[in-house]
Image (tube, rainbow, N blue to C red; front, side):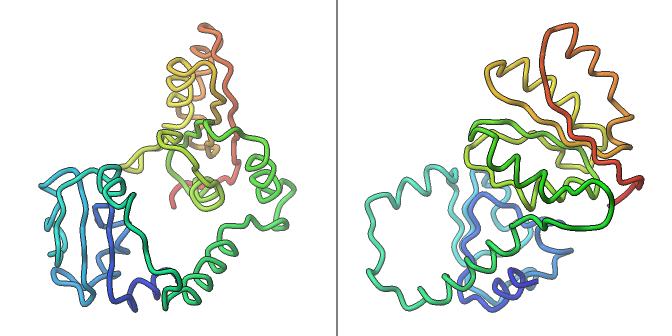
Length: 214
C-alpha cells in the first residue's frame, strides 16, 4: 500500500525494463490508462512494449543495462531536496521486506527466510512455481545478482522443482534452492529421480500450506 501510494503521488515515474501489465499495475489501477497523471519515462529493450499499455511522456528503446550505463558519468545534486522523503521510503521498504519471526503454525517461515538470507551466497539460484508460498521468496529474499531466479511468468504450478534440476545441471557449482507448495511439489516431485540420476544436489523447501490458489 505504501509503495502504491508513493507511485500515485509521484511527479515522475521512471519505468526501466518493466511492462506494467495486469499484475504489476494492480489490474491497471496503479496509473491512469492510457495517459498517466504522472510524467512517465518508459525504458524497454523491445520497442513493441513502449506505449503498448500506457502512453509514456518519453519512450526509450534500450536495454536496462545500457540505459543505466549511460548515466555512469553523470552526478546528481549533492543534497537533493527529496533526500528526506527517499530515506523515509527506504525505511518503509526495509520494514516491509524484513521477515516476521513469529506466526501461526508449528513451522515458522520467517526465521527460515532470515537464515537463508544470511547463509546463501549471492550467486545462489532460487526457483519457485505459483502459489501463496511464493510470497516468501518474492518479498523476503533480496536478489543481488542478475539471473538468480527461475520462476514462471504465467502462474504455472509445479515449475520450481524441475527448474531447479535444470539450473543445477547448467550451473553445478552454484547452490540451487527450489521453493514449492505442497500442491506444486506433488505435481513434479518425481523430478527428484532425474536429480539423483544425474547427481544434481538441489535443495527443496516445501511449504505445506494445504491450499490451492493465490
